[in-house]
Image (cartoon, rainbow, N blue to C red; front, top):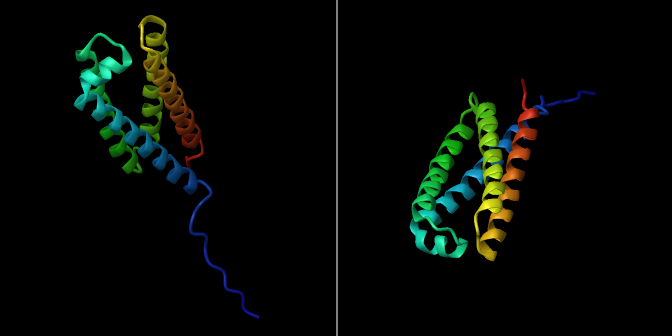
Length: 139
């Protein structure tokens, strides 16, 4: 009796690589949306959050758009994927620290505080998941 076996089509780390790319893309997409809203509706964002500076809102929003572009480009490159995940996670953790500082020092509105907390936890989740998946990539 002849047995036909197919060679494995994926390694055990391939799912981690694909998941990491997906998480990075979702991170980029949410950053792009937030940045675009901040740029196109600055006055509404400033009023809703209760911040005093439209200039800072525009600057942070533009930074989010640039961040999103960089993350998408880095996630496409097999050679740079691990470094992209690490740098993106470090920047995400910096965002979380900045969020805590803003919550402690800026008089945000109730909806502004809620949004900051929700986004802070979401970004923390991105950072942890990206680092975990990076650790499961092939060496």
